[in-house]
Image 1 (cartoon, rainbow, N blue to C red):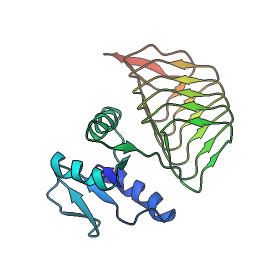
Image 2 (cartoon, one colour; image 1 turned 30 degrees about the vertical axis):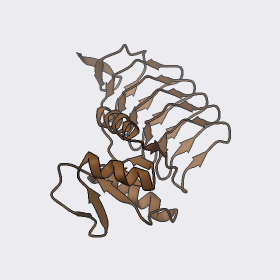
Image 3 (tube, rainbow, N blue to C red; image 1 turned 45 degrees about the horizontal axis):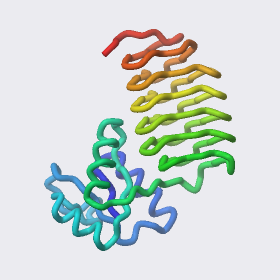
Image 4 (cartoon, helix red, strand yellow; image 1 turned 90 degrees about the horizontal axis):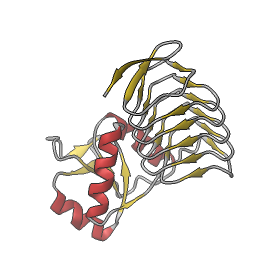
Length: 205
């Protein structure tokens, strides 16, 4: 199995794998790093040719970066080389039997409520709460400690900052950045940045 990326977020991915006894034989991919081993233990693959050969042995990969664009890039690259995306769910998180997490990563101490739907490549980071009937699109990053309250909707390629709160039934468009600690009280259009309490748009791409 290959982890895409060998930086800070990859450390948290590795911790989840170790806790689930899934770290045996893990490799990391980073074509920019000069390190040949991650955490002095796990080999680092540095080019696409070697990566493709590794996928012939074990095609599974996990996305080990947090940035939305980077997550999409690695997902598309690895699948084009024969990889199969594997999502991870930390043992300490609570996930409803009625949630539909489609290739979504869930890290430690999260709560995922009933009838939540989340798209491929999305990450729900440590300590976040995603309540009933919330919908999250593809390749979005729900940062640590976020609260998504019932029936709110998050689009594709969104970054919801640490500790942000999205109130019930609020709709956030695609390609939106919500700053840390922001309280989102109104619907948010595509392609903008929102900060503050209550949240206000400060930038439109």
